Length: 356
Image (cartoon, rainbow, N blue to C red; front, side, top):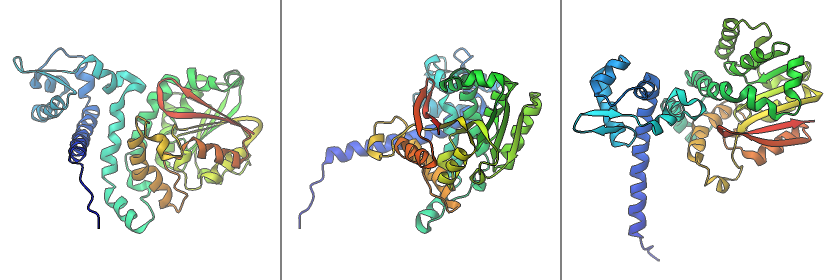
């Protein structure tokens, strides 16, 4: 029997990394709170300030603000002057933590981790017994998705994303029929409907809450060319035909993604286009090692995207189903021409432009 010799230096280095993981997890929690309370947004506008001044400016409890500042100061997010006892959020840091940063605001992403923590017990149960955790266990998911996607849609959808499809903008101006599959809260539909009043837009989602939000926003914006319908997108059968179909980060969540994609292909007019926006990753784990957000993507998949599919007896593609698998399923559904584009400001997604 051979006893393996322990590489003590390697062990100590890894222990140091684990400490970094734990500190990072703690900071994620604090960054989520800073985003939700508006602390980052306010601090970005303040001169060096004491905890009392920051609390007063935000209308928050000073004792909580002071402890929060302690975490972010020792974590290198906020700077502290021990002489004046003032705190500063550097402009370089604000560029990743404030709502003014738009799509570059990474603080909004941290909100998913407290949400996922709420379902950890169910995930552990699924590890042991199979199955999954259903959508109903994620009460704030629609709200978080709306906030995150709105940052991208507002900044790039009309001026950058839609022009990726040759001739599409001109057709939208003239007037065509569009449907968004798995539309969530419907913000993408409403953004497009406002920009192209001659076209007709429909949003499908099985979430009654999301559809209600889409309708409410459309009414508030005075849109007459946007409609929403509670619908299981796996039931698309080609009975209605569309010129342009979109799916924003939703195919990998589906219980029956092959059926959904086949229904999309059947519901697309002969000269129509399907724009499938989904996570930019490889289907091979070793090719994702250098991806800057790979651990986050696999974690979100385990804690949400994969498990909600498995909860419905689905395929469980997962967040990192990847470009190879995406091409395979699109071709299987009947799409013969598939191009992949990227959008500046959206480091998360591939933009699959598919025609029959």
